Each structure stands twice: as C-alpha cells, then as structure tokens.
Length: 488
Ligand code: GAP
Image 1: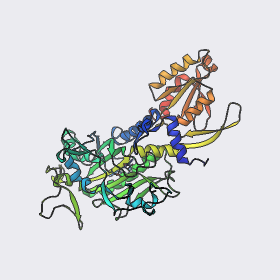
Image 2: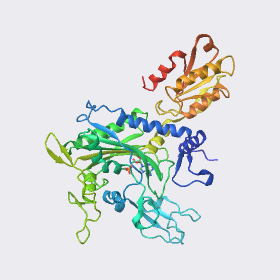
Image 3: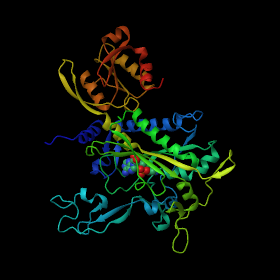
Image 4: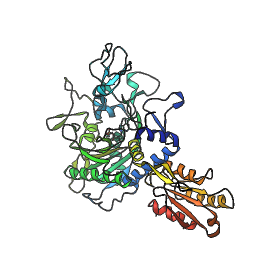
C-alpha cells in the first residue's frame, strides 16, 4: 500500500480523534461541507476566542499599542447571514463575485476555467477536461459564487436573497448604528466572527476551501491620511498573532500583492500565507487577507455600486445614465469634532478564516516521534503539539490504578481543574495508552494521581512535548494551569 502523505495522516487523525467529520457522512457526504467533532469544536472555539480577545475584549483603547499610530476603539457585532439583496448589488458581489467556468456539453461536468489543466474529466481513462475525443467544452462563462435562496412563500425574483459570502458587509451597513449607539471615535474597528457561504466550484483540500466556513473579520475605520500607517500596523500585527499561537515563521509568510493582483478599489493588500502540506514544496496558501480598501465600501453603500475610471471611483451607470445598482442613499460620513469637517473614513480590513486557521494550527502541530514505554522500549507516537491555549483539552487527569483512593482524589482534582480550563478524566486502560490518546488529541498536560499522592498530596504532571514529568503539590495545580494558559 502506498505510504500516506502527511496531509492524509492529518485528515485520518482528525476523523479518528473526532476533530472533523464529513458532513452528512451516513448519506455519503456532501461536497464542500464539514462538521467539527467534539475535539474540533473546542479547537475552533479556542481559535475564535483567542481572536476575539486579541481584537475586542482584550483591547485597551486607552494606550497606543506598539507600532500603532495612536490608541483606537474596538467593538464587536453579530449580523445576519441573509441581508437585504441590495447590499450585494451595491457592494459589487452581485456583478463581480464569480469564477469563470467551462462546461462539458457531453458529460455535463463543470470545471473552473483557471484549473482545467489540473482537473480530471469524469471519463476514464483519467485525462484533463477536453482531452478525450468526446469532450465538448464551452467557452469560459461567469458563475456567481453566492448561494441564492428565497424569502417567504413566493419563489419569484422579488423574493430572491443570498447567503452572505463574507461577514464584512454586516459591519459596513451598521457603521452609522455603531457610531450613534457607542462612544467610539475615529480611528475605530468593528469586529465580527460568523459563517459565510460560497458555492465554490472546486471545494478541496479538506477544510481549506469549503462551501460553508467561518470568517473572523475586522473593519478598521480611520482618517484617509493615516490609513497607510494603519494598514502596515494591522498587516504586521496579524502575522504576530499567528506566530504567538505557534505557527513557525518559515512556514508562515506575508506576501504583498502587486498592483495587478489587487482589487480595483484596493490601495494595498497583503496575504498572510502558510505552507500547507497539501501544497507542492515552496507553495503557500492564503490564511488571511489584509486589505486597504480606501473609502470604497462606505461610498458604495451611500452612492451605489462603484467602478474605477482612471484614478477615480465613480458610480456605475447604464446607457441611459441611470445608476446601475443604487446605494442606500444614507449619509455614512463621519463628523470630526477636532477639525469640524465631514469625511468618509478609509477602511483597513484584516479578513481571516477560522477553518483555515484551524487547519494551519493542526498541520503545524502534527508530529511523529518515538518515546520510551514503561519498559524503556522506543514506541512510535503521533503527537499534536498544539499551543496550550488552542488545545481542545488543556489538562487530563488520571488515577494510576482504579483502587486505593486514587480515583476519588483524581476526580476531586478534575472537578477543581474544570473551573480553570478544559479538562478530561480517564481511568480506562494502561497509563501509557492514556498518555498516547491525549498526545494525539493535543493535550499539553496530563496529571496522574498515584500511591504517593495519597500519602503526601502531590501529583505528577507530564508535559506532552518533552514527556518529562514533574511532581507538584495538588494544591498548586490550578495556579499551574492558569500560568500555562496565561490566565493568571
Ligand atoms: N471580506 C474580505 C474577504 O472575505 P477573502 O480573502 O475572500 O476576503 C477572507 O476571505 C478569508 O476567509 C480567507 O483568507 C480565508 O481564510 C477564508 N475563506 C475564504 N473562502 C473560503 C473557503 N471557501 N473556505 C474556507 N475559508 C475561506
């Protein structure tokens, strides 16, 4: 049997340990949709929580962070998955959010035009689309990636709506609500975490490209003259966030887009990329995009869909001069008390994917090594070296054996640790097997209650990465875990 690739091993571990399952698996699955299992849901929650703390709840608006042009305010939002259809017309998604596709008139298969050479035609033997004599490919045609749905009972064009393909628009359309209900002043950010949907033509590479996924986006509103500095600040700060949670710099990179690659409204875009193991050596995949969007978004929702004419963004009009897609007509400008001037703020947007982040952290953490068993013989093991803050289970508690008061003491400690972090209790199987199960789950610490614990109220704490054990008074366990998780 061919040896499994690293990616296949990671996918298999995710299934075996309950990180990620194929959606609707008992019915054969559904392409591009994934469920998070008991461990996966904790990993993703920890990633989202770390992001939310970094962006919103942990942010101190009274000081300027290192590298920031000034202090700034930050608030959060949670907006709907379905928004007024005009949102997507004014934003440009209705006209421009598409992939170019080619269809085969013979076998009815559909392929992304820019991937035709890498894809396989459903006919046998395996060849690229167009290579069989029977293939009859169309010219590339536009295929909008937004999922369409209907609101209410009538299935006609007047009730058409879309599942949001990004969370960002929820922040733009609430700009005035945030200004009028909070005390934020420019510069400030609005952050949101939530599901987005894209009818991806070729969902692939596990949870890297799916049709339903979660985004962690922040729209940062600032004065035009400081926007370039804020762009640089957010770009660098976001890279540092991934590093702080364990992504190594040689697999992580920041890539600035050249002018040809940028969206027509963008004054600067950089991708934070990771060398995912499913990619050929030297190739990187996007984890997050940081974009300087100028005043494009707020103006679009005021004036209507914008297009570029020379170095200007102007409202798009049809042959009769009518606005192609109307904006809201509402005034989304900001009144600056200091200058007594109105302005349309510029936007810097760090847009991350929670699923891609989960995949990158899993890929980075996956490792195989050999450790001695109870008899000193080297045993191969699979270990997930997840950062303790991201680990689905942060500490596991075991009684060495199921007698002599050990389970009772272990359960007491388990109950106490549950108040501090995510904890698991396990008394089944040999201690070696229990350690191994936690290593595969990424649990950074295992606490064992043994015979000595009953006598002197100390326990062993095993470190997942080194497998070294230290003896600690059980009364210090809670503070030990707080320290490890930076909760002290
Ligand atoms: N508001 C800007 C925006 O949505 P994007 O680059 O299209 O920008 C941001 O998406 C992030 O969302 C990406 O960097 C990626 O992490 C995640 N993402 C986008 N499409 C995805 C998909 N089909 N599956 C999983 N994650 C996706």
